[in-house]
Image (cartoon, rainbow, N blue to C red; front, side):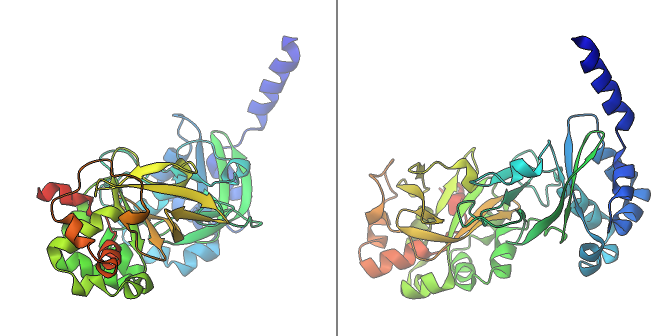
Length: 344
């Protein structure tokens, strides 16, 4: 009984190849070979005996397009660590319905202001929400709302797996930089008017429901029409803060989430989209340096939310006193105003 098992183990050990050898044996990874020749720390991190690793290796074309070798050393190191997943993630696991959040080795405070631990990527074969139409390929969603496609899968080495991707991952950035890249101009205006930019950029573990510019406009441009006090109160309805960051794969259909406003919102997963109350998420799982953002097609309103979970700040009722203002205010910058707690 034990002989076949012993022989199998011996055969596996005899045929195991190192991380470096696996890279050398895989086509279109010549440039990555050059990287690990001069960067032993990354080769060691990928092959570390402290648990399995999954390395998402950019192809030669990806590294060339990203002008990787023109980046400074610290930025190169951050990119390389962001491409290493802490654990074993075969293609079958990355392809699961609902998507999957995976921790990387990117722990630098500049890109992982999470109160401890490394930042993440979101892997999905079902779009950025994890609940869309299935595609033929897995995509990895990263900072700034960017993504890369897995082109070659499950290359084994002694200590883990390699997947080849067609782009260099965008590093997670602050909320304001992310909003600029996503062209959420109205959100940025609201942040500036409420003097909250620094807070949303530096407070850990924030989940932001960020209405698009079109949503702001439909609501009557509250980022310009509301006074800062009411705009601030309205923004709380679009912000979650707590021990759990709101990556969509961690939400159950029908789950209630408590916002900074004290009202709960309800998550629905239906018709190929995620919905927050009756508002559609049109771009999900944008990884930021201190949390995650989801872009909405409309503003949230407490009239569609469950009973308040706690008392709303005095004056918040005035912010929602008219349908027009309520929508606009709420739309307000969804961007992580959780920080507002600090202003109390």
